Image (cartoon, rainbow, N blue to C red; front, side):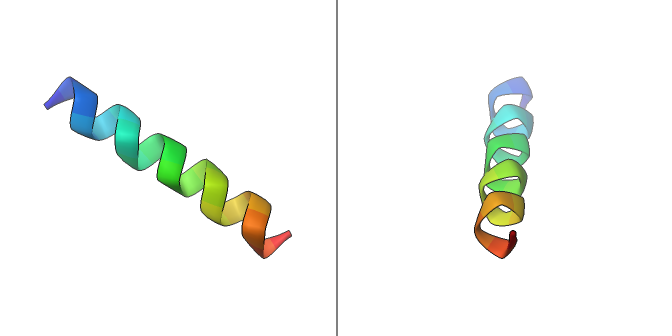
Length: 20
């Protein structure tokens, strides 16, 4: 579960960077 949360966080960061 912890790993999944970290993966989501990374995905969110990547999405934000792409959206930039």
